[in-house]
Length: 283
Image 1 (tube, helix red, strand yellow):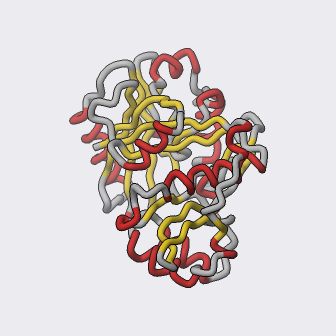
Image 2 (tube, helix red, strand yellow):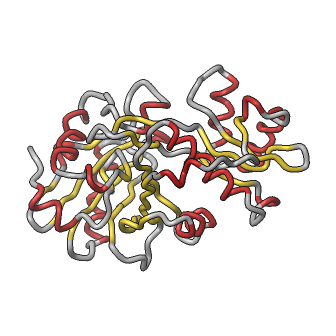
């Protein structure tokens, strides 16, 4: 099948593409959805897929035979094999989702594909009510060239030996995963850090850029966290601005991210002037 943009465009409340996540709004169209379906059965990656940094094959894949695409709604189920298998049902419509019906679809697909972790329904809105995430867009400019002297690459940091403890204390932010990759010699891109009391207290990384669907350089998502004991002291803003300077120096044009609603990161991004392009909801 092929997607129709005249059907998709009216229901695209956020520039979020199944298995890819948030994308630059100007790159989202029927061709991008078609491309996702085109690689779904291969295990391969699209060139700009953020996940290709971590593994040789794509984990989350669209269940092509179960896609529904009409003028009223588009339903794109996908499955990840991690954690025993999880089915996600991505729903696009101008109307409110029928969550019980979508949950039943997810349950049926989870059973048929032996997804032991169950299922989740993901839908999108142009309003924040009940949303879990906010899709935000950063557009780079010459203002991002300012240096941030309090931030340094981890590889040049005298307190680099404390990064493992920082990763353990931050926990689910992803730095434990990144630290293990560092220890096994993976070169994923630089990680920037801030230091206080002779220890790493904040980090953002790994930093990388990739050519997006329209050929312009995208700065890819990165793990970003400040130790709870050192928040509200400017570390987060310094790390953010330093990472933007890094992207600007490498000709990045845009960065798209999903901020957890109500989080400190969301407040930082709003204060830094990022554009909001819709909201993500899920069960």
